[in-house]
Image (cartoon, rainbow, N blue to C red; front, side):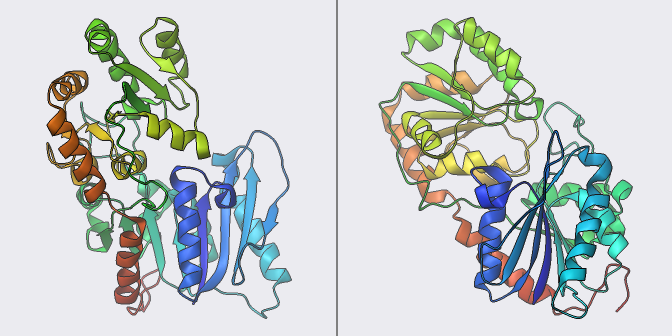
Length: 377
């Protein structure tokens, strides 16, 4: 099968999040004996050349750097596809399957007018109320605006919570949505519980979505109690709320260590005892999956996919905003319970191999059905 795959960012130098998943995904596609073209797009501040790379035998990969990303994405990607087709050894290069990892590529797929199945991997959907703490999400992705409801034959999403939201908000997609949870590489994120540590870690994007502002307020309110318990709060990441985090650092409320990747990220994980994920909305937490795999005691909000990754008081704690620090102070009084949570966190963490096993089943079951992006059969 020849696959045309669209993703965001550079999967050849992946360290975290979606780029890391896309790297695993490309390796899995090749392992199944498929070939194709993987087009990765990276928003950038200035014009840079297209970076073509042959990192595997059967899959061509290209990284297109695009300034003014939201205005020029479809134009630049279509321009490259035309160029690739013109230089292809195949008389008429056509894919058998199109996969999109971002809704931004819907206009590209529509413009190509291919009579092949289209799968949309929905990694980021924030719309309905059930997936959001405190009301409507500030980010409202209108799939109709990008033609997704006309474009996708199947929608794969990270959790049952998000699948339910898509089906509720967009009924026309209800019978096309398939929840398939992600996973982490448990061979990479090995158990390192470190129950003698004094570190409460926030690791992730410093954005409103991640609840960092509310968490910092809670830390400030409990500053003396945290100190009395012999604990300290460490924040790692970057994003729109960076200045607020830096202010908290200089106020002595937290320690800020900026972005951590590779070996430094692994050391940061090893050094922590607790991890806090106060997201206001969350499809499926990759950093949470990594923390669980490492045996960290994770305290999470009840948003979205969190409820599918953490079973309350079994392998972590589901807490409402304002209860994260109090939960940790409660755990500090019960070392036996800490050990239980840590062991169960590692045991219940989902490995990336489970994700791809399910994905293989969906490919087998669904792609035998001849559907096209325009509904022709």
